[in-house]
Amino acid sequence: MYTKRPQAQAINVTEELAKIKTPNAVTPEEHCRLKMLIYGDSGVGKTTFAIQFPKAVLIDTEGGAKHAQYVEKLNSVGSKVINTMDVREIINYIQFLMTSEHSYQTIIIDSLSDVWDTILDECTNKYGTVFGANTVAASKYFKRLLQCLATVDMNVILTCAPKNEWGKEGEVTDVIPDCWRKIAFKVDLMMRMLMAKKTDTHADFIVKKTRLSKFETGKTVSAGQFKALLGDNIKGVERLAEINKTIISAKQSDIIERIATYLTTERNIEEKKLTTFAEGYLKGNRLTSFEEFTSDQANHYISSIIKNFEISSEIINTIAEKAEKEIEEKKASLK
Image (cartoon, rainbow, N blue to C red; front, side, top):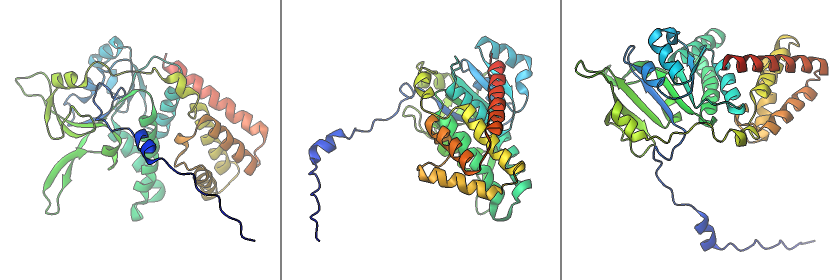
């Protein structure tokens, strides 16, 4: 029997168009969470520049923060240092900062080149280089890292070493960050730092990429001009309470990682099977990575994987205790 379809509700085009906001250029004063990458030769002053940002958690991959000239400055602005170049550990620290009460305002990774080289070497040893398998695997870790950095309600300052970009005729066409090739798309401001002239004590920057309206691509900016353009309104962690209620916590993320390790090492579950399960869950929730989980989604995923792979409550309790212990250690390291 033919059933008449209900008519679609008429749309008032004028009212709907009125809801669309006119896009406004983002200025440094309005862009309260700075996401920036600076790159340049060794000794140019990248670290000295980065640690001037207030109340920073400095992820020091090179061990340079132990030198006296850095220690005094870090202490004067209330910063802390973490020594690691393991991308998984860095992700875990950032998730902790995303979901815990603290007074830190800035995350510095010095240098991101070291983090990329380390995970790329690891993936090369594990997957080889055929069809770029190593780069594909390493890129997945970096996507997760940069998703966290984009989400965290803190300023983010990344440093990189430089490398030459070569043209078809073997000529140098540009100097770019020595890092994951898509890094430029993940920051709001990318600048190349040049060695200070003998007559000057401050280095200059060339703006290589910007989403901030007061900075112009290709222009040279002095350190003094940079501060003036940036303004004094870069903020810290005012929205933590709101964020805490919604995003996946460091503990939840750690539990997911530990469950995966348990299944592959203790239960001999094929990594491919576990990956298929995880990808299916993410796709079903229209997500691309665990970092996009809300806290409720993370709990639901943990429950689903426990049920699907029949993990005992005793094992889960042990995993949860280890995750809690690691969180407490991270808290202690940042005090």
